[in-house]
Length: 387
Image 1: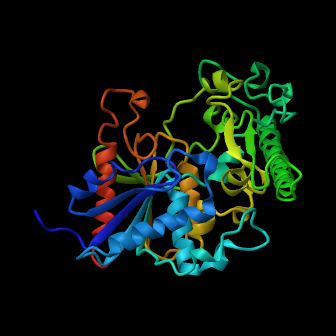
Image 2: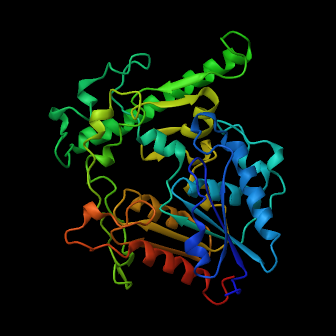
Image 3: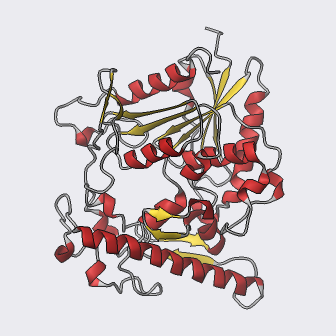
């Protein structure tokens, strides 16, 4: 129609293409910039401490368009830590992502970035380091030979509670031991990567700058994808955006399905291992931790919950009712420092919004999830006085 909102939308993801994001926004009267980072489809080479420079370019670009007076960052999935990292550094300066406690520090080249005016997170991951921790197979006893496992910690051992045909049921003792050993394995990997990187820098290894770093069984160890009792719901009554567009407040249970087929990938390189470098592992997939659910969020620069404690602009968190980040996103909401904040779960939504058709008990049960979620985000932005 030639009219549009004065709020510009910036959408991006660290490694996945966002270039198709704009139609839903444009059809509702918004100018949206969908951008890819320099690391699209290349997690192996990623440097988290430089990736936010790409967000800066996007923010500056959309700010230069006539009629745009406010900017809202939209981060879906891994875009959550991307956008919150940017906003936290923009609000607090380069010192925020520096310090001796960081596994990797950012440089002073991230100083002076223009902050956005609002943030929307769509089923954000808790962080790449946290996901990296929780996806580790705790049963691995030899990093050079990941096929060698401790059978008492093997999540795919029937004696431990694995169900190859449905939902697994692990004992509380097994879950506690497993989550603790996941953190032990993460610490072992960190120490190995740091030692190898020092040797490389000293000229004592094959290369002086970096080297390949393969984490065997690095993607097939998440108990929460096998045992649906883990992180299965909100801890408190929260808003549920129902398929008919209404909103109710209740304890929200995930309707996600188990993924026992992960066991078929466990001994594979493709789909089972993580292919990184020493630097990209420490920058992206590492975190200091006591267990898979007790970690030092400040030890890396991509933990969503840590950044939300240092962001003050209006914040909307939407999460998917048929995925496994419900409790994580509720925690993000609880941690967030923004005075103006909202949290809603989209009923029956698969990751980031589309309906989870396999989760439906009757055809079309969750058919409106994506449209409802988009309309909710637009209504939130258009709330009088917010922007």
